[in-house]
Image (cartoon, rainbow, N blue to C red; front, side, top):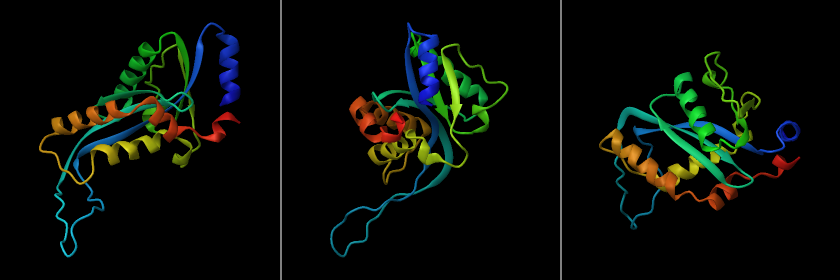
Length: 183
């Protein structure tokens, strides 16, 4: 990964090269009760329902700087991945992005339109621990989706936007930065 980043720097000396990790996570109206505190001898009551309505957050983080980019889309598929790549490319139009993804079908699709300033690399199969953005999803769920149900999908999206906007670059950096990234 770092060797490819060096090659990109040599080929594009006038551009900043970013190594960003990408993934998607579903957020919806189904909830999983979590542990919580309550008074002694009182059983906690946690609202729960099982409606299967989701929106998917596509995200990319740069662990070394905490730089991040998120987009909420209706599906996990090639069309939505293309929208994400286009918007990521526009946001960092003056940079080269080495985007590290897992092996999801839509990350390898023949219909994927990869912008000129993005190059995609894939982590080995079944190694989510190699993708630091996985920890961001846990953080978002802890910060905004604990023991609560939502009346509408719009409420889920609103909460998701609020929670993502609370993520600072320092927070993202502290959650995602790993020593092995520098090897």
